[in-house]
Amino acid sequence: MKKVGIIMGSDSDLPVVEKAINTLKDFEVPFEVHVFSAHRTPVEAKEFSANARENGFGVIIAAAGMAAHLAGAVAANTTLPVIGIPIKSQNLGGMEALLSTVQMPSGIPVATVAIDGAVNSALLAIEILSLGEPGLEKKLAEKRAKDTATVLEKNKAIEEKYN
Ligand code: RP5
Image (cartoon, rainbow, N blue to C red; front, side, top):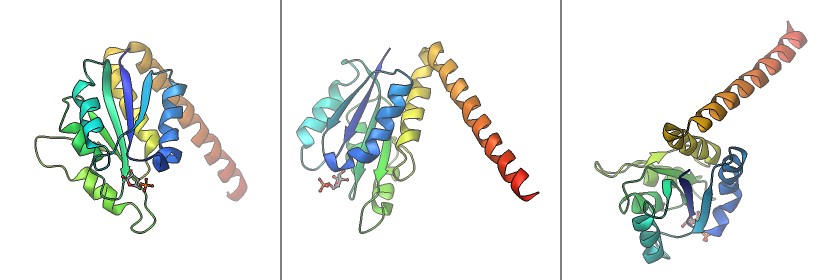
């Protein structure tokens, strides 16, 4: 199976990124995690991205906060699908990272999830990999069914309490 590459701009992003890591673990999808920054270590970020396809990656998740150029810079150096996670910041709440990540010019796409949307970044990566992995398609369907059952149970409890 192809690996998911997870890159974050700083180790301070790890508490959010760990949710993506845990989701990939739940699905037994192989991954690598790195701290590469578009601004602080641009050479390393470029090298990883440019070699990612030949190094066995199928999709890359890039998490960054503030002037979040990481996902776009990664996407500029690979034709693999890139998923951006805008990380919430103290001063501007992540809106700056969201806009920096999502507003890509035509030709270099970044699939952007919600601010701190790490779980969805992993699920989207798994969905992409599932195109060539029927086992993952089955696990995704099972998770959806489990999530639905959980919500229906909560609905039942609320209905019993108030109706
Ligand atoms: C971004 O700047 C990182 O992705 C992080 O979200 C933010 C702050 O980084 P630190 O100053 O905490 O290292 O590049």
